[in-house]
Image (cartoon, rainbow, N blue to C red; front, side):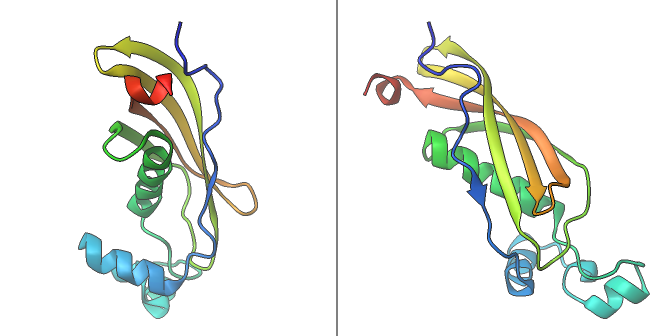
Length: 141
């Protein structure tokens, strides 16, 4: 029997306010320099957006942070993400995970985790699933 029960909730990751500065740092680190992420005038006038939007991959990266915080460094084996809505700057994101299943593997347990990220009003921004390896010594402690 798996020591990781289906339905287990991962500790929630709340981002706090996602500022323009955080988005600009991500932009430079990722190499995605599309001006809709940092230039309000461009976002409004050229893209028809009300303001800048956060990179979709930023939320996927937060899923990785959520999963590694739960499973430990190097535990994330895969992440699949579906982007559902745009995330404006000056918003918060709540990332959640729920264990769907866990199967025994030679190194421990491979957990399948359902993921979702929502902004402060509950609007779904991204969802997906991940595979996380929980090593045997972590489940026996």
